[in-house]
Image 1 (cartoon, rainbow, N blue to C red):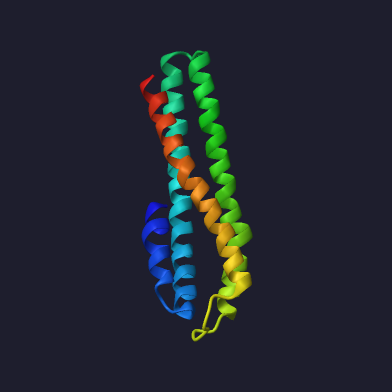
Image 2 (image 1 turned 90 degrees about the vertical axis):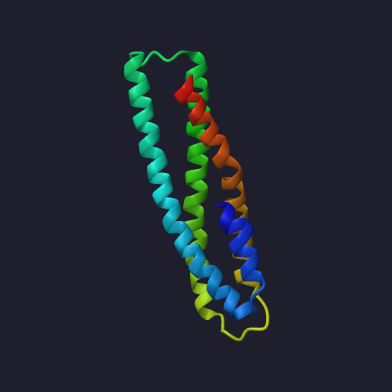
Length: 143
């Protein structure tokens, strides 16, 4: 997420608008593929850790653990929801508008720019939530 936000997207804006539109859409497709792989890994490792930890304490974790786990699960579900919006709501619209954008367009088309702004807002929210979810997971693993 950090690479996409702080390196790739700013670099794309230095390109000519037509080329930038095409490059950003290709990057989005790759990013979304990687995102779903990471989401799957986080889910699998989280469930594995929960089961291993639960077996140690016979699934009687205690109030503090339950609270942190509930917060982590809620934040993970929020991230999953945001990723789903990016892929299933904004992704197809961005792809469709990108195809309609000529290579020699002089500026970013407004409908496309608007969808990208929403897509990036969701990415920024997930970029903020991600480290929190990871830290909560580390806290659960250690405590």
